Image 1 (cartoon, rainbow, N blue to C red):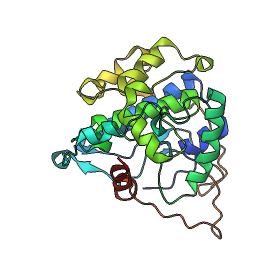
Image 2: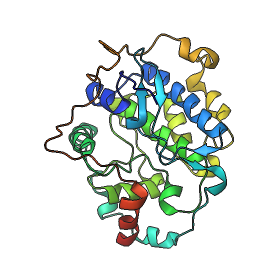
Image 3: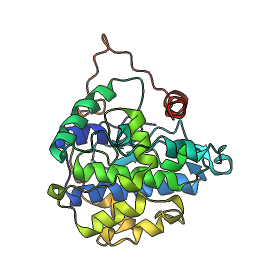
Image 4: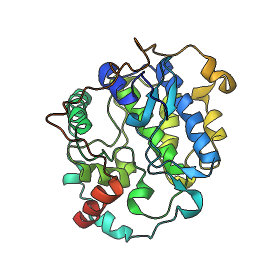
Length: 276
């Protein structure tokens, strides 16, 4: 696809830390339309994360990176023993590591590690749906879970299941009922909390499992005119000096880092299953 000089959502969140609900609503709504378009072509994106949400020079959202897209008729995967995952949960152990942090400590720790992850060879699992981790078979609804995790990060400052290590994050996601919390200082509206909770839930009850219209009808989007969304004034106007301007992306030191993109399913998930 063409180069988009407005930057990506990861960089924007690192700069802004959190977004207002008005700004988040603009980006989440445009992401809904992008994901809906993928699903209408009978594909699951499977890699919805801030790094793949790009901004054009006018500040409007584009969805990128289709390397993990999968046709709907090939989406079912072989199941694994869910009891093994359940046995790996110890309410006093690593699955709850870090839950004693206050929200400021959580935010600061995430910001430090997010910068490290930007230079890492492995992506973060923070946006992966539980049914994908469990390999129980999944469909388009896994993309809506990822969007819910991104919305939470936009408004709170860090992902909902963030931990110091990816294996603990995976365990938290699998046991999501025990780990979804909204810090009081985030001051989310009831509508925002409700939408997040209806995205970060069981696949069969998740908004979007019967089409994007379910999300569009949610009260949090009540003022959105979906057919004119890309005609709206942008939430942030990126500074772009020319068509090849790179100032809105993180700068990588090519002498010290070799950035290689590995699929989480290849690198992380086998290690996750072996640890159970």
